[in-house]
Image (cartoon, rainbow, N blue to C red):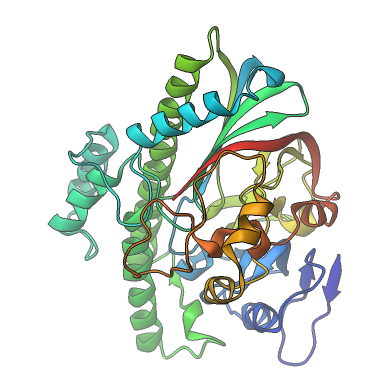
Length: 409
């Protein structure tokens, strides 16, 4: 662990498990260290890299306040994994794996801008509406078109680094795993409350180290409303993962006779929660970080095609009982699309069932449907083994998962 001590202009120390913190991410951490709502220290996980306002892979504790950009725009983004009762050597047939992949893609809309043709019902929508009615009003982010889109997006896999995967565990079992978030819902909530926090800070005439770190006191209605809506996004994201995992389990069981499932894990890694650390209660913000309480199981995925891990937390207070949420990017999306070669990316995925890589394409580019994005290639990410080796005081590895087949958004 690297430890930057407090110095003039810096109220809090920074504790980092990241071996090389990029300058922009360190600058963001230093701004956090000067934030008036935080206490004790800023923790940077091994996969730390630049985000909006706060580094992704950062953890902070706030006193009676929430910072929307310290949770992030994909509220509730997280992982779900299911252990099958099937021996891992029974799922090596490429034709069978390809068949599972195709059935999953038929059942789950995949990719940026892809949604269901018909909306899904979910009790959480009605429960949230009831909560709004009890509180006496609707937030500004909630409008008819967005609400309709949320019902169409429920249980779908977005773009970026979200994925559905079949794995072989070193425990001798086949595993199913997926990574997804709250899609457009979390994005709307995050942007709305960040703007509200900016307006509030201007009215209070606060001078923050970075305007991207505008915050909402929890003794004001706006702060309580953010927590209510964040919780809704967390439930929505968890329900989406549950629905996609059900589709994945159904596809797997239909092609692997006698398949059953005896363990299922679901975690968030973009959220805030009230917890007790270092002798006091605070709102712990994890932005691209996984809870790692003592004995608590978590999921740390690698990049597409690289190993992933089921881990057990060690409850380290230095990290606010947190660990990494995956293998961080070593290249930005634009840089990866500019530098990486499709043939080399295909070689990196040798032996894994996947769609082929296409020409470089960025958000908003036309065409390329059904082709993997070069910005998500293994070469664009850090080595997950190095990331894990940096946090063995935070987690204990339980199961190493090797990718057999992957579906990417």
